[in-house]
Image 1 (cartoon, rainbow, N blue to C red):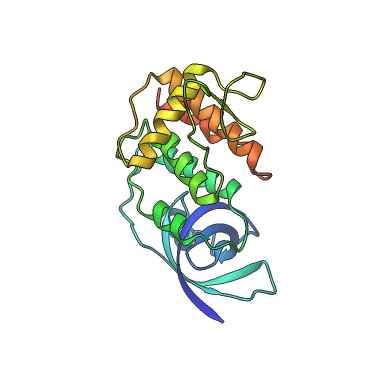
Image 2 (cartoon, rainbow, N blue to C red; image 1 turned 120 degrees about the horizontal axis):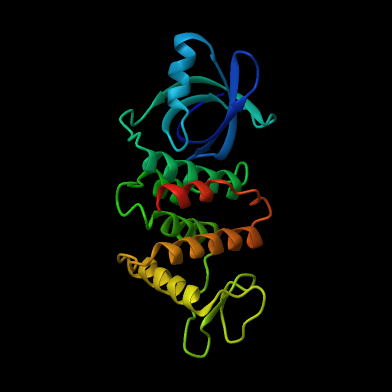
Length: 232
């Protein structure tokens, strides 16, 4: 059967001389993989421009649940004027990699899709990676518990909450306090606090480690290294 669905590009890799496989996040079906024909010539260049990380698409796809690879009948961009500057491109690559590694096939998450689909990458880009990870964690059901207090000032990566005593899986007091501030901003829909670059980078690495502890497929994460460079 044919199905029309909005989608967001997560990852694309070659399939044959004339086709690619696109892993996309759809609103109705969750993360799915589709074969898209047309790699060469002007048509191929057009398709390549459509399939950049986090590109929003309208797709008409063949939906056969008995196979993991379906074909695309029609594809078009919903926002062809996406910014192409290095910072925006790096943030899109980062968000797409987070979703590609965090989502499971065929698990619809419409609220997460709507959040990603309305992202404004130009709004406080230095804060975006931390905010995006915490929003995504909340939609996936692994949001850190914000029980920060004087008695429990250290965040524990495995327990997902603030604890009293340090061990090899707790953040430093300084990084724990910054995480608490970001969680409070998330819950209150306020602007996250400003922080020095080094603190933001440490917390970003800590949150990636948190995802790796709580999501089995979240490994070999690469785009944070690029962000450390472009947001420096």
